[in-house]
Length: 287
Image (tube, rainbow, N blue to C red; front, top):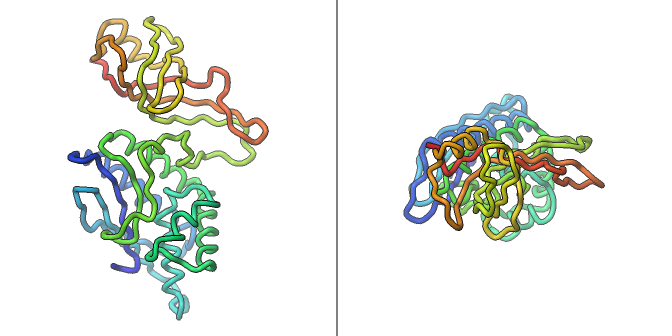
């Protein structure tokens, strides 16, 4: 395994294959996050990203982070481990947007190949904390998870040090949605309001069968019901003209994109009154 090798990992539903366009688009976002993270940690370093191969059972895309040092003085005894910690921070940047317990102990405490000293663990904390504040890394994180949400065959995403190693971190599909906290919300500590656009799989509980924005009721798997105002004009028009590819029945599955408006109160985020809307019905499709 190259000292600079990292592997982007996708878990897949048994017997299914990932959509090539989705994987390619997500991989590009990960590559751009690597570049942005590298520039944040060391503005003088350059990164060469080289896709090596992919395996189908659980899809992996391998890359080489080739540090091109600008000063020979940086190549000294003990620098190899420091390079590894920098590599880990850069590769993990879009998968660990928060810093603190149990993040580091969970991901690096029990795996021998990933074991690091307390000193290196502290350095990793500091680097990830630094990268967490980089808006470019955060933007690529959002685009990465929004992209892979489109492919239901992808059950998880993570990263490992080599193409034969187990993932250091694996984010399951039920945490892809924005409200799970996996994505860093691009808002400062001073911001009091924010708007997010998660994509969620739901079961339709109660529609409002009129062609105007009204509250519909949905239920995500294993979670309580919630209401959201249906504001997808294309879907409402298709509904009015019987152009929706679905029949009225119990348990209609839907994939929707929400607009969620939140407000901070006493340091915690809460949904504003009437702040949840359906801005796009992804499935069922309109004819």
